[in-house]
Length: 307
Image (cartoon, rainbow, N blue to C red; front, side, top):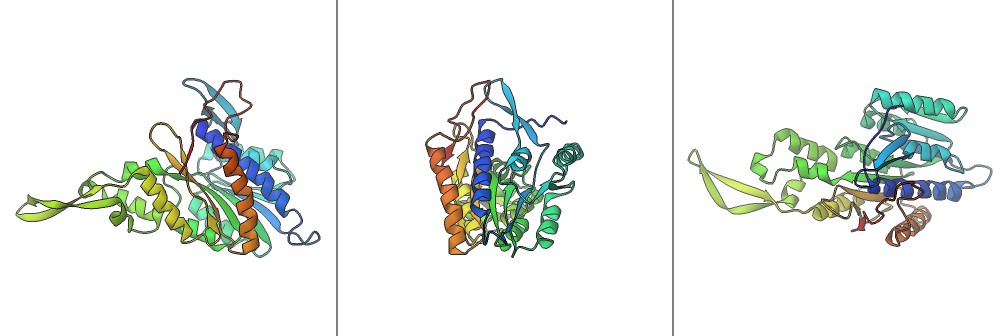
């Protein structure tokens, strides 16, 4: 198995939230809409890794834990179908072994770009008779806005989305005039608009002379929390059920991620159900009852904050 090393205590936070929500989801829908004609339940993992992950849990210590794919496979009541996506060939090989060991479960592995795979899954699924959960924990800025919109348009998927705040900060130059065009295009793809140019930047009233022309300077004024708030606003425009306020991870040091929970189904009963489950988990999060646990090496459970 490929050694999938990444993350820190915040990784355990998101995995714990996912594990508990998947159990809630399966239990809540096991007899819906009717016991003799229930919804088909699906799980979609857009960046599934290997099934396990090795995370840093102290200054030098690491611990190997179940990744999102293994968590989903172990969930009871079980999902009817699981879609596991990863572009890395070594990761995909491990996912195929995981799928084989789970036979006769319906586990499908896709070694391809997440955007293409997600579109194909969405287009081939009967969403009138299916409900599901999508876990979106992208490598860098790989997840495109149009793909998020396709997820929202199913009106049948709940989504956990770990938005890469640090990726935006790396791409968005402090001085807009020095931003590479390809970096601006990458931000356009992840946010689905170029409006961020006005929201993240402020025009300097002063100008500089360049080859006898007046050039206006624009500087980034948006903080990571400003960006997270803007992403929340954008997500609310496509997920018509509900979008949680972002959870900023980690709490200390530079913010790296903003974790969102989004409900695509606008029906009041569906929204109420999903909000009840997620709301309970966010309350647990506030009480420090979500995160590192059952590890041989003590981990810092305080590496999170609610925005």
